[in-house]
Image (cartoon, rainbow, N blue to C red; front, side, top):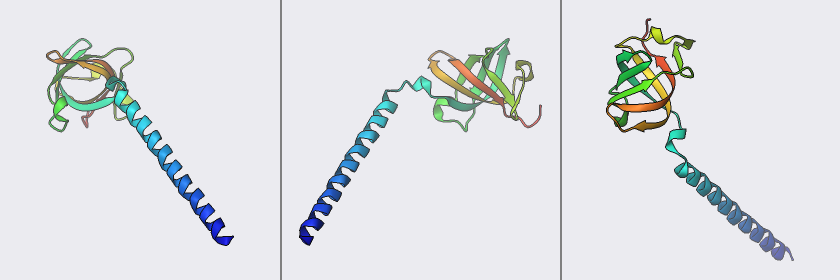
Length: 132
């Protein structure tokens, strides 16, 4: 009777391990599918740039060499009321930004394939220069 009990417990442990593995795989697969099907525009992205032109609230920038290859070109975007502009964790105004300033740009949404590429939804512009 003792061996039967050991076999029974071993069988239950094996079935439990198989079920746990199956549920883990199903959860992993569901998460991967969700990530693959999510719109890329819903994830915020950040890159570094130098301001090359300012026309009112529209900025033209050039991506820096430290960026991924996709963010080294020319871009333009508009700063709207919802866009947060900061320097050293302090809010600043659009007038504090000048041509030649180094900034980081955090955006969501798609980039239009124009020249220069147009970002539609800039969330945060952060001034990177040490002094202002």
